[in-house]
Image 1 (cartoon, rainbow, N blue to C red):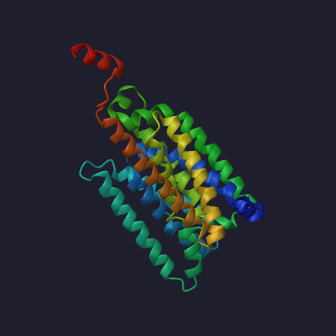
Image 2: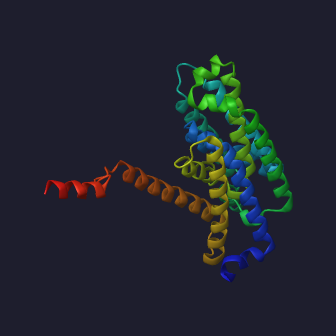
Image 3: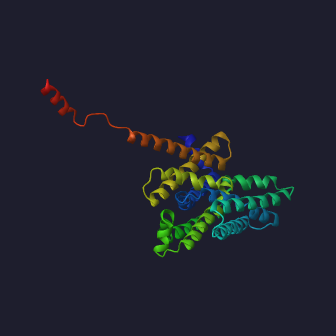
Length: 294
C-alpha cells in the first residue's frame, strides 16, 4: 500500500493529480460530444492547430495560453466558414486547415534555434510542473465548460442525432455547432499545458469512447468518462513515478489501454448475448415428460 500512495505525498505530484483530474472533467464534457458526433478528426486537428499560436507566443514572450486560444479560435472559425461550402466536405476543410496550421507552426519553430526543449514540453506537456495558478485556470475552465454543456445540452443532443430536427425545433443548429466548437476549443486550450498538444487528444477521446460502449445516456457517458479520466491520471502518475517514464504520455497510454479493455469487454458481452441458449427452459418439466413417455 505504501508504494501505491507514497508518490502522492509529494507536493508536485499532488498538484499533478489534481491538474489531471480537472483536465479529465473538462475533456469529459467536451469529448462526449466529439465522440457522439464523430468529430474525432476535428479534435485532433484542434490540438495540433494550436502549435503556431503557442510557438509565436513563446518567441514573443507572451502568454502561451493566449497564443493557444487565438490559434484554436482561428482554427474553429476556419472550420465553420469552410464548412458552409457545398463543394467541400467537412473532412476536407478540417484536413486543409490542419495541415496549414501545423505547417505554419513548424516554420515558426524552425526559425528559432533555441526552441528544441520548449517544443518538447509543448508537444508532450509537463504535468509534474503544474502550479497552483494552473489549477485555478483549470477550475475556471471547468466552470465555463459546465455552463456551456448545461446551456447547450438540448441543442447538442438534437445536433448529434438529428440535425434536421434541431432546425425544425428552432434550436439554431449553426449556433449550436459553433458553441460546440467553442467547448472543444476550451477543453483543448485548457488541457494542453498539462498533457501537451499531442496527448490532449487522448484524454479528449479515449475516456468518452470507452464509456460510450456501456452507458445508455449522455450524462452517464460524461460521468463514466470523468471517472475513467481520473483513474487514468492516478494510474499514469503512479506508473510514471515507479518506472520513471514521461508522466503525460503515461497518463494518455493508460487512458488508451482502458479504452481497448472496455472495447474487448463490450465485444465479449455482445457475443455472449448473441449466443443462443440451448439449455431447456424448464428442465424439471422436461424430465417429467421423458419419464411419462417412457
